[in-house]
Length: 496
Image 1 (cartoon, rainbow, N blue to C red):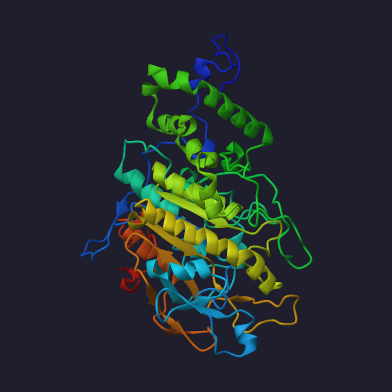
Image 2: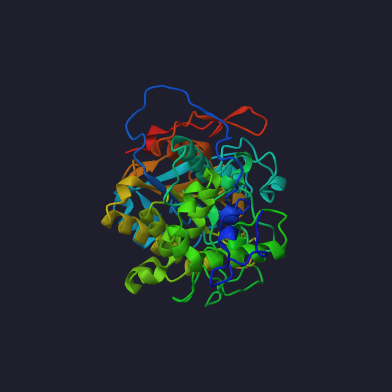
């Protein structure tokens, strides 16, 4: 029950002490305040572990919604016909024998720190974000836009949060363990938010804490079909802010009046923080109330998201755009103690935006997507390394699939459609190999010819590096044990 009125003992801003001690029903930031200990038990298979287990203290997941082309990123085919190769060329990297797209020059210079996989493959050429981010064994179009569909499986970051919660039972984290930026996946498109980054049958308390960003872009991005907008992923102002918005994680079904009440409470909590931290009755809170109190009143998250604390030169090095500034915020959150941070390079304005380049493929890649990703990704890796964090921070880049080998040249700016039989990803840090190339494809990057990897293998390897046995089972909502990565397995080819 949330009490707002009805008692005269008020603070100067109108919030009473009794009201503060009746926040048991407050689910701000996606934290459900039901019994913290009434959770499913973990069961893990035992066995010998090769080196690298648990090397990652934290993880930054960069998710490129819409899915980049393998040809114009990490598997160019310079000897292929024009209708396959397209108009972009391959360049050498710091690692002999590894060539990548010419519009990734900064990444080419740090290739000796990275692992590139060219042989990812699965049977679902659709925007199965949940398939890329969870152990779910199959996916379809309908499930993509239903985050609460009972068939969904928990997000990798939610499982990390859950396992850490079990390991640290009775002790609250200094920082939330699972945060996602800059807003809910799909929240700025014409369709409902997309499935994938949710706790599903673990409970909504294990959803990521979603930040909010409401500013408009500064410059128009290359068109998506006939649609043109000022996309913040291309450019924002230094004064634009990523914030913790109380409505960003409001439970489903909550009306606008209740959201307004929670937003008002958060503002009052900020003003009353000093009094709260000094009041001894806070110690009498139950575990779940203390968890909510901790997340509502701590300044750690707010400080980490305050990018004005960073030198302007550092901000500009990451890129003065939404992806760059979100990624810088992710580094700051990791430094502040967050375990798992996700940054979405999402579509904006139209669901067919982002990396979903069915048309205007080359203008969007050359003048927007590739330069932004190249600058930000290279800046992150070098910044983590300079701060002594790369060896303990796993950096994953995920997407749903690749794109068709053959160009659809009849479309404006040409285009590539969905393709999941062969695609690329890049990883770094915390036990991943350095200067490492895994897998090969045929002459047109259409099929894998060696070392096929499933997205579930990537998740299994990530769990392994984060110190979680990938054979762990967690009970679903019916009490059945479910493997956290489905049929995925740790792939030693990825490890350093």
